[in-house]
Image (tube, rainbow, N blue to C red; front, side, top):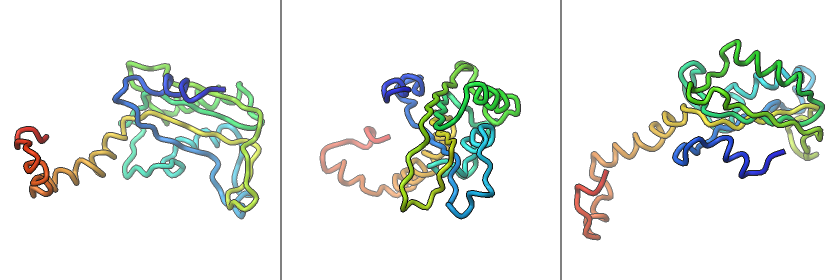
Length: 175
């Protein structure tokens, strides 16, 4: 049971490092429900697979892209012992790598109430669900690919700079 301020305190080590990655498990259609295991170890592993993230990373490498902090929230019939075993196995199998200056950056939340389901939704209902919110170093590559690279191309062509010069800004003031 955490509020948003507690999440921020647990996930953001420095104010400039405040960009999160979110993963969910299980995310399966109602037609595939019978073929999907719903044990704690499986849903925990699935949370850390980029295919279950709400943000697309082109080349995520669990060894290179380290986590600064992780919050795992479970809903449904989940015991603390099962979660502890699943987290220890994640670390042992090197599926997650924490930065050396924050080796204990993993928090867990348990809620007995299963996740709410909408009847018209295509996503299947499960007795156990997990959500992972993490602060990861891979986000910097994402920003470079999606923003900085395009900015550099436009800057090299001097695109839109006339607006700044027209307002009296000098060329040295633009990064």
